[in-house]
Amino acid sequence: PPPMATSSTSAAPAADDPRRPDLAVPFVDRVVAAEDAPLDLYGLMSLIFGTMALLMNVKVHAWMCLLMLLAFFANINYYEYDFKQILAHVALVVIAFISTYFRWLIVPVKAAT
Image 1 (tube, one colour):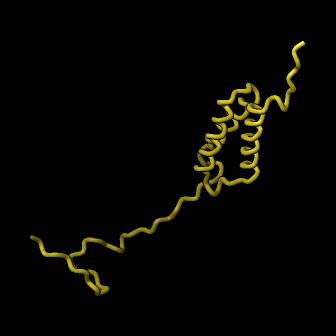
Image 2 (cartoon, rainbow, N blue to C red):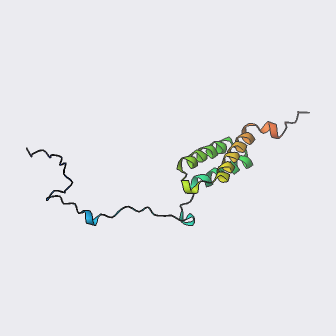
Image 3 (cartoon, rainbow, N blue to C red):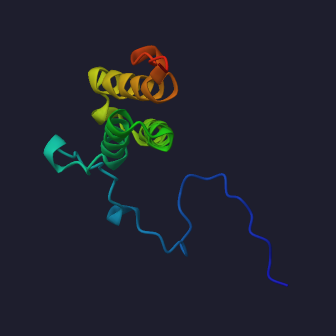
């Protein structure tokens, strides 16, 4: 069996060390401009499904709006964070659910004559 490697306490590198620290390049994170950022598809789909839930009064669209909003929250980046945009998304989800599930509060039901 090969001999076990022993940990060296000296700061000097071993003579048979193949690493070359003079060629190491430190990592530099790229700065992405706002216009070059990827599209926010989850936020866009949340707005589309919310608008469809409002216009067509379909409950599945309201649920898809909520699902896309949660996916939007899970994938949001710090540089994309805008409180007004998030507040508008949440308000649209709430209005979509109210308009689809509580339609009788908005449009009164006429009595049959």
